[in-house]
Image (cartoon, rainbow, N blue to C red; front, top):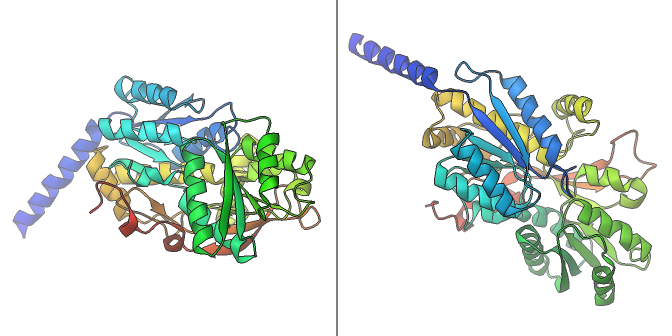
Length: 396
């Protein structure tokens, strides 16, 4: 017994020494700070990370340091910034990464450097599929969950013929593909698609193609101001009045706020977070609102939640060792306002409940930012692609 006690003490002292040898933990928030995704990610993601740092406190006796930068929705620029952070500035983890091209580029760099990449703003399932990484984490949502939420619900309500307006890069392609699969599996039909460049101002030709298709549903496989511009211009063409319905496949609460309830009412969407769902979500959202003057969306909640989970894992193992920290992150349940009951899989997918929501009418809303009626909860194991279907190379 005495020998075991001595061994335990030696191990404990060794762990404390390892923690003491750690320098300051540095994190980076790399997002669209000024472009079409700035409201749904961007500066709000920095605020979310700052709140996580304040709530967690010190790690290894040091304050957690934060960097931030604008990737301008360019994968090459995102990779250049992340390389400098990893190689020159000693950054241990990058968060945010709205824009799938940027997220894929930085996750690959993180894999090469043994650095943590925790994505909350991008949607492509490739992040946990063929481009997965042992140090990569996909936190808030993905195109599979969005498709199985919104796509299934719309088809069930009779929207069985679809035409897509698709952002012409990895995210839009993935979302169109996932929703098409759901529509067809449910007995519906995809009549066509029009792919538009990122950050498009004029949707006239694309909307006219959708109108000419005769599809009951025009699915918007885009995000940010691309989505809000398409919805506004569809109203100018009288598309909804003529009998077709729009489906916003990735919408955030800031999009609804920008559109106004008069234009956005009755849109059905899938979200991983709603600020007014519980006492805990309301308390955190009010803190966020005090700093940003807007309520947080799911990308913001995802940055806070993923940062807190990483910090807890580092504290638990007493180091920033990638293998040990990732194992601790998988071993610990996600227990917070964002992902209560969630868990991290081997492919990097954080599995948590999603929510099917309907946008309220102006008459139904009881006040500022009271925008959603939650129609149903989609259990995480139903929302996300099963692990056995993953094509992630390091998953057995």
